[in-house]
Amino acid sequence: MPTYITAAEIAACHTKGEKVFACGADAVLTDLAREEADKLGIELIRQGDNKGAGAQPQPASPLQAQAQTQVQASSLKQAKSQSGGIYGVQGFEPPAPLTHKRPFKEVLGSGRKIAGTFIGTPHPVMTEFVGKLGFDFLCIDAEHTPIHLATLQEMLQSMGAVPAYGVVRVPMISYQYMSGALDIGADALLIPQIRTGQDMDIVEQACLYPPQGRRGIGPSRATSYGLEIGKKGQEPNRDTAIIIQIETKEALDNLDAVISRDIVDMVFIGPGDLSMNLGVFGQTGHPIMVEQIGRIQETAGRYGKPIGIFAGNMEAAGNWLDKGFDMVLINSELGLLGEHIAGKMAALRSHM
Ligand code: 3PY
Ligand code: MG
Image 1: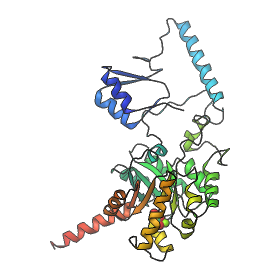
Image 2 (image 1 turned 90 degrees about the vertical axis):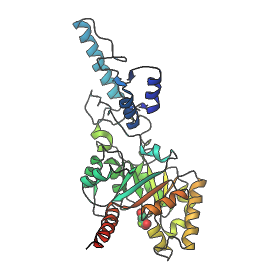
Image 3 (image 1 turned 90 degrees about the horizontal axis):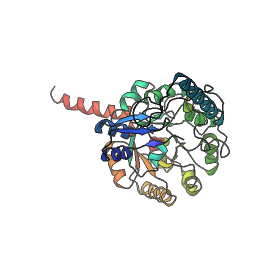
Image 4 (image 1 turned 120 degrees about the vertical axis):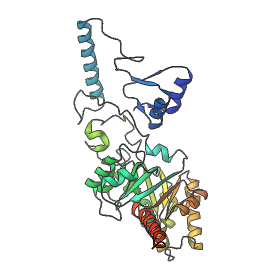
């Protein structure tokens, strides 16, 4: 398991008057830590770099250098065989990324309020662009669009260098889709139409590695194509983040059975389907909706689960946040673009 270096540690180094921060070879710097280091002019040195504090001792002679290389190679091999020795490249430890978002699961559990939007355009340019606009995450929607796994992977890849996390809404509660979306590197899954405890059994089986589930491990993007297999040691399920959607009458009948499950990192209300199921389509302020949304919020709170909801626009999103919601998913990139363009065009018309 890599050690995460935080901005606070960099700041403490600066406070002590130090100019160099030395960290282990597989330490991972959070984005904030890297920004802090840049801002404070702290040089980051990894063990194994041939300079500065934390560097390995330099060999005194060529013979010693050869011996040192042999020791390093054999310890790499040993580490690899200890880490499973399956897939990957024998004897090669991939370098840790220099910048890294902390796992989205941690963000979900941190109490921080977050906002995102759905992405329905099946192209990485859209995720790369919208991912730079200030959202905490984007949710690529494979439920109501024809985006499937190969394109999804390209879209997630486009988000590697943007601040927003990449969540995938899977189209159905299927092993193939859920484990597939995790394999291509989704930071979290949003799973629609959850109705029963049995649905949650399928989610658990598909999303968790044994012994809790049945997810198979392989050389996918999630394991750096095999290079990182075994890196999470005994906790391969540690970063798997699951958000379940409550949006049917049946789910309302089974709230405790569904929400209480350990695998649930967040509960998300789909007011469109929920209102349709309750016979008051589109009326989020209808007393039946107010009552049921309150019930879901209360149940999530009782099990210590954060809660999110879909909002049609920024104003509605602000209202939900004020009502105690932890997450808002605001419309989609096309909806927001449409609202903006249509509004601006209406204003322009007054000059015509
Ligand atoms: C719904 O409102 O039904 C949704 O699924 C929103 O995401
Ligand atoms: Mg829905």
